[in-house]
Amino acid sequence: MTDESANIDRIAATRRPAERAIGYQTWSKLLFVHWRVSPHEIAELLPSRLTIDTFDGSAWIGMVPFHMSGVRPWWSPPVPGISSFHETNVRTYVHLKGEEPGVWFFSLDANSSLAVRIARWKWRLNYFRADMQLHAEAGKVRYKSKRLWPGPVGPGTAIEAETGDLIGALDKDLPAGQAVPGTLEHFLAERYVLYAQKTEDELLRGRVYHTPYPLREARLLEMEQTLLKESGIKTHGEPDHVAYSDGVDVEIFPLRSV
Image 1 (tube, rainbow, N blue to C red):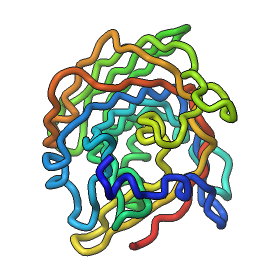
Image 2 (cartoon, one colour):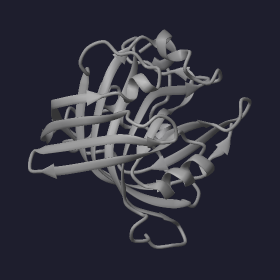
Image 3 (spheres, helix red, strand yellow):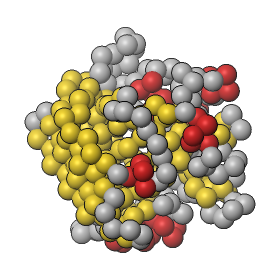
């Protein structure tokens, strides 16, 4: 990490906010694919108030395909047909003045028109409607997507991975699969803050809460994608880190101006 990133409190943001959640979701079958990149190449793509969060001096670009289900506000049960869909997000990691380490999303593709419209309007997130498929079987998972709107049709993914055992418990006080604070796995996966740009001058911050991800070892069998290029992101070579999680139940908290 850079000196600034090394001094960030990474535990505070993992604690549940002391307020009522406004919604609930379940995230499952998540594949965390990451590339190491130069912080200088990514910083120019971010809002000016956000700073790249680094690990070992590098920024990290993530692509995370997964399934989202049980999506509902606090006052309603899930609605069949609109509360479950696939998603793939392209992201990097940021902080705000050395605090609140979180996620900046370059793009989020989903195969739900309603979810895309609501997220673009209410959450100010860069969602796109896409055709998407996800197939999971014992020890293997496949994801495929093709973006439809808004913008050009075609950017997408074709990813297949082999999934393995829970990552070894590096700390005897933690269960197998749980990332230890200070490790790359914790830096990449355990993110509970998101940022969004409402206007040129207004930045929004949102919070989520869930138990730590149960992370598994994973190995890519196929990796084709054009989503990074579409966001103006350049990577060099194959991904540098891959992990998988069966999933977590998530509480959602309000977006607020910062």
